[in-house]
Length: 240
Image (cartoon, rainbow, N blue to C red; front, top):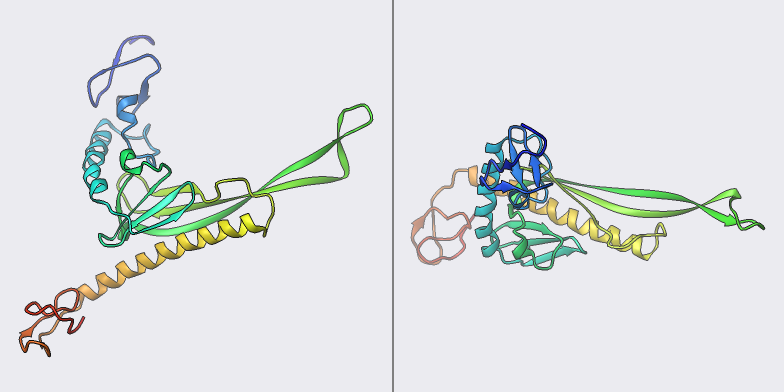
């Protein structure tokens, strides 16, 4: 086939316009279908047509999870982490209209770790000499800036991490107010993710422990408490 031969998307079968092709491992993908993939997905070229079809089916189903998602807690700056504590789900999005962006909704158990990198950027300052030329200071002088980059490690079939910058603006002073605010935001996100991960693990362990029957002190029925430690007859909390 020639360089300018017409190509068709192997997913939707529509004709691909000029400069609109997105190569796959074994086929072609149009930019319309590519735009529907997860924003955290990065291995398009290594994916097969079937891989992309599977992901697009997951992304379509994800719309229902987004519609049912009701945030009870929000952390972050331009990049926000939303938590639905009732459903034990969370998502990350940069846009205020996050429902329209179809962000990936994940269960608490899918967050497997969280790391923070504080990157220091160094730029040499220059001065102008008597002739108006830029020359170096003696000794050299430098200007520093800092970026707080967080990576949330996740367990999904389509991507393994969510990486974003905590600070919305450039931080020019180590230990200054902006630096401390970025550190506080990072610590809060990391603490929340760690706590929810530990809570999920404890719930799994608790669910694996055989429950024994007991007499409800409120209604007198002999029952096995449910997952929340409640009597199935009167709803009173009698054990875990």
